[in-house]
Length: 113
Image (cartoon, rainbow, N blue to C red; front, side, top):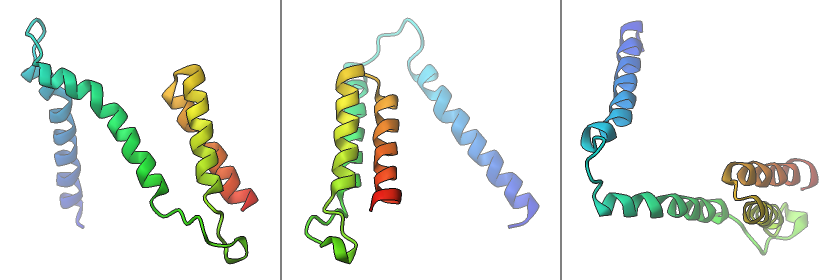
């Protein structure tokens, strides 16, 4: 990639980012009623994304591979999920819960298994 191509790519990415940030202010100006469908999407898409992340996390988990063959029976994944769920139920802070669950998962994968 030449320098000109790199600059053009960066400018296009910046323009796309700016466009996606400001389109909501253009489409739904202050004082205008937000359509009920958009409000509905705002309520359900967050939990749906997290549900999709859980499915993605467990997609390659093999519960039946023996420990001698390098299997973990899903223990790190399940531990991370339980820690994330427990901390979220207690604190209602998704960022703290995700960070703690990820840390538990990574420690188990890198150190224990």
